Image (tube, rainbow, N blue to C red; front, side, top):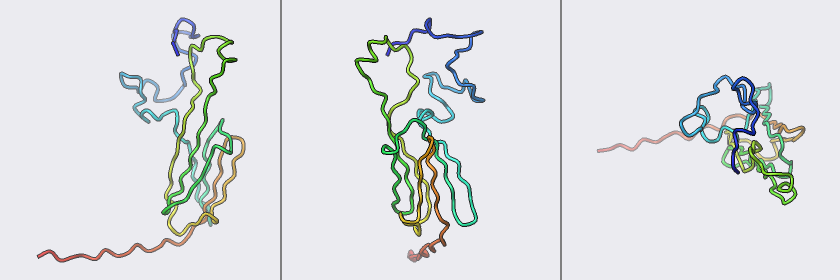
Length: 153
């Protein structure tokens, strides 16, 4: 994809496609976001709320299909994964050359420690309007095994 700055609109020197973000300009000399690194565009934004009997997570996944989202539980970690692709078609090429692509495609995942007492049957998940809502019941923490010290002579 070739970028042509002359074709991109700007008003008063500001690129209309740039986000109004309080940390704008915090990029290194290669254009990578210093705050989030190279993953800035793929970050799963998540709200975590503590209820009386459960933890509630709302994960923003706009533009993802339900069948391309998964949630797995292993060793006390809940891992949320999602992937999407921007289709490159001959029809799109007939419409003209793309001078800027802002839509992201690829895979991403994020893990949350929920405790080893939580099972797959305990976790409830629902995907609606680009938000994955997950409910995780609070469980009694499993006591960690005590460390046994070995005497060194």
